[in-house]
Image (cartoon, rainbow, N blue to C red; front, top):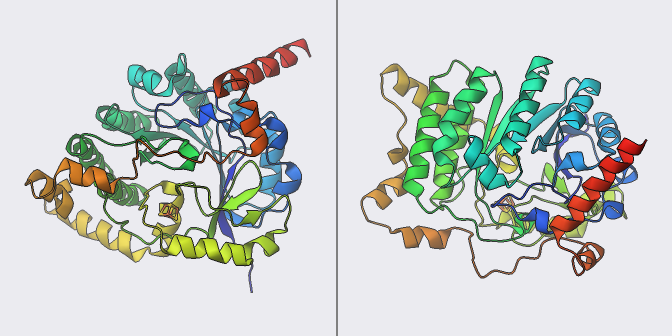
Length: 394
Ligand code: SF4
């Protein structure tokens, strides 16, 4: 029997040079010497898809070695990045022409720079994208986390990606150990949903079947920001996994506290994946009520339960042919908020936002120790400065 391939996400570092308002990971970096090694990466199973993420993955100077090793076991690799380290990104794409690159851009210039807190971040990210397009790199795209502050830029950014012939990935605000704090919430759900509705109609109106399925994903985001149960079951930890910088294997990055199935620094993959602890975590997933709708958990579910999005696409394409469009009011909860049957406060209670929650940020004791002396921002800034000074003096 052919070996079953998995869908994996490798968090290569918790260090990040951006200061995103919806992700506080920059305050809680990992120590470089503790971050996942090539030896541990060699122990990963065969994968049909691997996402490399962080933190900011390009902070790791050995990223090319990691990608080289992962290509021995993965059919497709996509790196999520803030696009700041243009030279490193271009160099890696020259070596690996099939590598996917997703650059997070949180809106048009002003909004992006305010949300990401990166000086000249928009121009840096955009010029990286343009360079990749100029070199005809085939798998390039934008990623945007939609919130009140940037919802109005959603469709203009989609149009920009469309003009450049790029992929356009969306997400909305989540709260979990991965984002370090639990204060993310959409305030004006109706306004945000209206922007998603416009995007859904643009995607449905395109000629690309892939975009029709993206329309379904964005329809699911409207459902998510209204705090409703997921449209598809969550099967994380069954054929999908995350591994963090410390070698801890987890079902996902959406749980409030880190759920650990085992540690790949200490165990073999088979021991870990078939362990009692892994089964316990699968049981937690089976009963998980966080209802996240992030591409990492939804994409495998859309493939597995393909008839659900496929039927939705068929119904909505048929509507288009009769000149009717997708309406966000197809969702009962959206009508109920409009008609005053539920209140904003009722929906706020359904979100995972908890202003008073103390989140266990998933750092090792050693990584926490370094935060007693310096802030995460100081540690990472010094680290990057050192990297560049060393390279210049070589
Ligand atoms: S719904 Fe799925 S992806 Fe979200 S926290 Fe629960 S198990 Fe993780």
